[in-house]
Structure formats: C-alpha cells, structure tokens
Length: 186
Length: 186
Image (cartoon, rainbow over all chains, first blue to last red; front, side, top):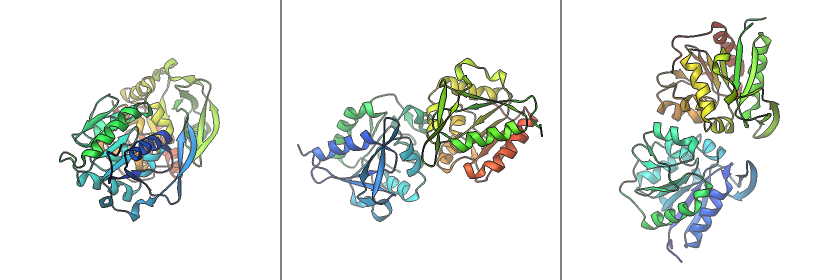
C-alpha cells in the first residue's frame, strides 16, 4: 500500500533509543511509502538499547541543528530510558519537537518518548499515555494520562511500551496520513 | 571524627545507580561513624553504572519490602538515569521514601535521584536542584529549582551531578547530624 506517499517523517533519537521502538515504526512507515529521515544531535551513528543493554547502531541521516521541522510532515519519538534523557538536554532538539506542535503537525511518541513533549511544554490539557514511570511527570505537566495501548488526541499518538507497537504503528499511520490537526498546538 | 555516631542511614538504590553517587557518599557517612544500609527492591546484588556503561555490583543489605523507614534516621538517594526510573515503578520503594518525609527525617538526593521525590509527591514548595534533565519535571511538580552545587532546604539536601559530590557529602553529613526538621513533610 502507499497510504503515506509523499509524506516525509522525521525520527528524532539519540544513543539509548529502544531498538524496537525505532526500527518497527520506521518499517511500518516505509511500508506505506513514507520517506523516513533519522535526525539526531549526534553525527554519524547512534547506538540502540535492547534487553537491558547497548545494542546495534543505526545511521543518522541529518543533525538536528542542520534541519528544519518545515521540511517534514510528521514526527516520531521512540523511547528508551537513556535516549529522551539525553535529547531533552539539547535545546535544538527541544525546539525541533515544539515546532511540529506550533505547525499543527502529527506527532507519535512511545514509552519514555513523551518526556520530550514535557520538555517542549506541549502536554498541558492533552490526553495521552506513556511508560508507567513517566506517568507522574506527565500528570504534573497538565496531561490527562490514561492506561491504554494507544491513545490518539488530535494528531498526537502515544503508547506505553514495545508490546503496544502493533496498535501504535496502526494509529500513527492513520494520523500521519490525515496530516495537520487544529488541536495540535504549542 | 564521629559526627554521625549512632545514626543509621538507608541508601535506596537498584540496578543502574551511578557508581560514584552511591560509593562516595557511603564512604563519607561511614567515615563519620554512621551505620549505612543498602536497601533495594532487588535481592542479592545490584549493578552500578559508570562512564556510560554497566559497572561493578554491590551487595544489597535488605529488601525494601522487608524493612521500615522507622529503623532509619535518614535517607540517601543516588542517581543514574536507569536507577530511579526503575525505583519509581516500585510502590514499596515510593512508600519508603515518602515515610522519611512524613517523619521529618533528613533526605539527600543527587542527580536523577530527585525523580523519586517527585514520585513520592514531596517536592511541592521545596527549594532544590537536580541533574539538568530533571529540572522541568521538578518545576512542574511545584519545586523551586535552583542551579547550585548543593541546595539545603529544611533537611532536604540536593545536588546536580557527580562533580558536586564534595559539597553534597559535606552538607549531607551536616543535615543528617542535625536530625529531624519540621519543614521536612509529606
């Protein structure tokens, strides 16, 4: 199929991304014809995380301070404990994430990925989920946290963990196909 | 010296604790005559983190669900990205931390350690610091976050990272020696 023909998706990640949460959504997006670009504050390669330890590296396509969100239709934020903790310290990455919300573009975030949404200040009043350890921080940021395999709120797609990937990928493709949502704001 | 003679300190940690943030404060406390007990949701041993990878293990003295905060005078929470993310998912650990605040006992937390204070719901209105990536979550929880090597607020001692350990250890010993503080509440 080609539900996402002519759609350009940014994946923002760095070292410590949960391997399945980057690789599997990327495959699901490409299967539907999307162009997927891996963006990072790092040059060259970033190292994944799998079964509680460092795993394989993947190639970085572009550094975050050398691209603009204007060049993308939608954004995917994988999780991993270490990955968003590193990303949220990087002002260019935080600004990049915020821009998608300012432009009403769909965003999908899984597991610890929503920590970047807290850092970008875009969670107040939004209905969403995350890995359980991020729940309290999301609630304190004003989000309405719900315990479900996938939660969709006006172009914002969130899931809890790798076991939710089939439901996450399905809703992500739907929302990325729909494009901009007025309720998606910063 | 023996500034902490007859003082019993709990260190609450699990896999992924930043090695220096457990070992160095433990040494500083024992040097002053404190009895230091390593508590964890895990049995046996827990694995540290150093220079961006897993490091040495240390022995766990008691499991958190088999002890009471009543048996301790004060609490130390080391950091590490993975350690508090695991601890905050464990209800017995969260309750253990909260009890120290309910009993007005001094608590020291460094780096990502303050994530456990957010989870225990004891940060509202407190002046404190943390690793930079935890700042936003602390502010959203009602804390007054300041950028200093060590911050003391009525029996609550916090620091930002391993480089602050000398200042952190000094203030921790002072507060643990003073004992209960009325302003330390849950």
